[in-house]
Length: 371
Image 1 (cartoon, rainbow, N blue to C red):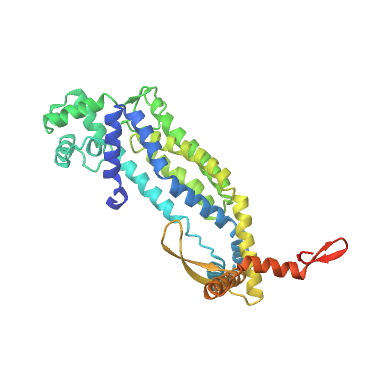
Image 2 (tube, rainbow, N blue to C red):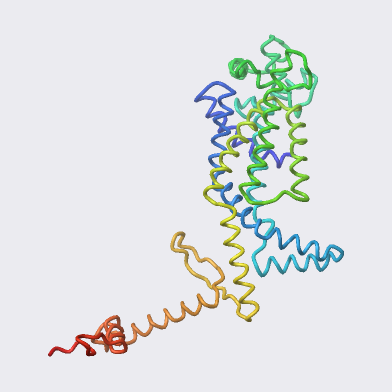
């Protein structure tokens, strides 16, 4: 599990910087969420474009799966052919998803351990505090229990911290309330008056997650089917678990993140219309099919990208390759005969065109001679 929380430490330093800027845990989480979403915009754009592109292959994949439903080997062979011939890659959007996954667990780590990640209380002190409280240092609610013990003046706990740590924890405890909700508390499924405020953000996080997922799928042009439908309903169950086993601060983070993601998806839908992307991909597929029927294959070329200055590899169609060869031949010809030609090539071409298509003047052909 340690690998999942690998981003906890760097994100903790980001949260510490925000906390020093605005010492209110609720607003800190909101600013922290906005910053994370801002940084992840390039990944989100990449994922959106890949998903829109892959939506063009959905009918083809469905046909293959239906046609070879009883022959898994042939089905896999056809899917591999689809990937090799037309660029179908169902894993193309996985990298942004994995990175978002690690960011989510990094945020969880900050929320689990705010005293260690934001205030940098030593692990040794937290271990002593856990022993005094009769719990484990891995307990997700250890920071909450320590803050409660410090506020109530429990000397068995306060004695394990040095003066600086104790002062920081006490100050931090004074900035936990956000509109009357203690963000270090863990929500409980209860209708008790004291428990109801803590249910606000877990419920909002579930609602906004459904909304965000729906709009994101619509913006990508994909239709939910099979595993996607399972994920659509499995993810809320996972977040129900998180929402009621970790401090409510995580639910606040996830609610804001979903709202921002929803707006972001709608903006990107306007920038990268899935229907236009799909039409473009379908046109490329039809062109490649036509070339295959006529035995024409693309040529792989290596060129320097003018924007990045790096060598890139991509496929060029036969017609485009012929244009490039003709242009290169013209350049070589111009270089070879540049010292022999007294009239510019463009002027020669204009004269040849005039000779082939003479103008009429007063009913007679006019070739440009003076009378």
